[in-house]
Length: 226
Length: 267
Image (cartoon, rainbow over all chains, first blue to last red; front, side, top):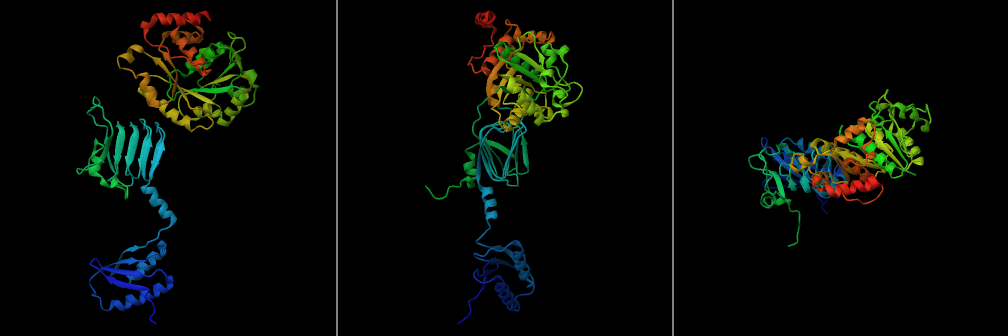
């Protein structure tokens, strides 16, 4: 009976895909990979660099082993590992991922001198008073008056938005951009439910909340349903 | 077992000491046994406002460093029949002479003998503030209708909310000038309470009589005919749990006022 193949190589438009079986031992896999790639090398065009995607299925490889695999493949002159795709992640990674996408609800008043910081999105039930600060890795939604400072997308997410029931900020920041309170005060008209986002000219603009439906459709997280 | 109330504001000059003196006096007028504690070490003046400066022998730091017993340091106010005492602050050292744990111990000891301990807090948010709030069960935040004072009050409330074993702070708006508030040059009471979102326990109009009385070492609350005095007495009664509507600020209601004044004058 023929031995099961642990390493299969497929060619696609983007480059090579190395599928590594997830049921054999790592050492076995490494040996076979080395053999396969050495054999293949002879038929390759010497000058052309080929990018390789490595699919490892349900196998978890810590960073050091991933590096080992990468360097093993890189040794074969014109192969460059584009990415390693695994179906599994550790609990820590999962937690971090969840924290980045989760909406954290906080019910309190952020007073002068206080800083409220979250890795993902924040839904604040309460006001941000002058001198108070809200910082989020994602979006900021405030069901109250924003009179202090809000910084959305603080890790560089330019798609992040800031929305508030009443927008009277001392300063707004999204990613690396900032805008001060507009000098022209239009306080006469009642401003309710507004949002701030970065427009195509790379300025932070304040507009009606409803424009977000068009500008940031990915704010919708609802899956399925009607 | 008594209750310790700290009077604080963050910003200086909004009337913490005056408020402490008058709330203490008003509580004593209601028949409660009150001890005023001045924690503004190095810049004491509650004793001056109370007119008890000449009778200080020992001070708070002497008590904490065990150079004397508490009762030796307490200055008795002779205008009240053993109902009002003052523990003065030291003038020769500064705020770092006392630690929060020591203050807590001292206040706990005082709570055994008094119904209310009124703690006058220094301005700022440093050591002095930490000392003053350490032993307190409740807090009253004093502010004036000025943006800077409200900003600092907001900061202070934030710090007070972090304190364990303390009730939600309450607000006194001091130095209200009605004509300025009407013309929109001063923050309105509603604006302030909405911004700080804590319970309002009293409003006090700006009154020259208060300054006069303080300079004479007689808290205004002793004078039943002044607007500010009534305001302070009302605050004291609200502290005691009575529900009293806020005084109207308008001078047009002179008649109502006269009635209230008379009512208090009679008592």
